[in-house]
Image (cartoon, rainbow, N blue to C red; front, top):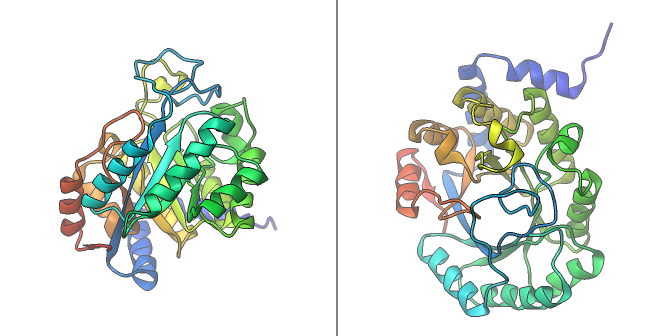
Amino acid sequence: MVTKTLTDQYLELYNAPLNELVDEATRITGENFDNEVEFCSIVSAKTGKCTENCRYCAQSAHYRTNIQTHPIISLKDVRQSALDAKANGATRFSIVTSGKSPDREDFELLLEMVKTINEVEGLKSCASLGILDDEQMRALKEAGLTRYHHNLNTCKSYHDKVCNTHTYKSRVETINLSHKYNMEVCSGGIIGMGESGRQRIELAIELSELGPVSVPVNFLHPIEGTPFEVYKDAIDEGEILKTLAIYRIILPKTVLRYGGGRALRLSPENQELGIKMGVNALLVGNYLTTTGITPEQDKQLVRKAGMKLKK
């Protein structure tokens, strides 16, 4: 008798009728969470000219995409963006930079940005700065960073199809460094990049083993000029809803967060359904190189789902 792997067991559940998955995910959410949805926001502190070849990314220097690049922004700009995020209902605010890792000069300024965010009452600092070493992670902790964001992006078995200028292992090592310095971890991925349903489940299992408090689920926004512009129809709304449901089942006590691409991939009605069955955090405002839904629209979405905004 062949014993089913954990992935096989979840895949069998994933292939069940959608309504059964939704019901189970909704039940698990009700057992583990209050009827609250958290807002977070980001600022692209440095945009474009990245040396990595992630095949979905408009910021990669390997591809010709129509984006505006800019060097690292000022502390004044970061503070204003943080204040705007708070006014829009965000309780978390993240600094995001392009590139594999920040250079020494930029990193010193990024440490000051963390301190600047922490000065805004009611706002918690996050950062997404790429692959870091021990010294950099320790410095971020000493500057007062509360959470580090570093997506796996995809599962181990599909990683080389997405990027081969850095390894899956290097991403895991960065996440483990965050844990070493007792920072919360926010780590998720992008779905709709040509991966299989099985591989989306593999990603959820791999994430569960890394212990993030928050898992952002992004949906590929195919950018013209990138290799993954061909994946315009790689995933439909039914598959997205099944993925959200199985993620809630695999990660019953982890915050699931709508990331980028949801306006492109999900109707407002299905975004609402996703919240009802387990998505309990939203990235609001604009994303890195694409625009998002307005914060007011997202507040209406939360209300329609029968939830309240977390303060």
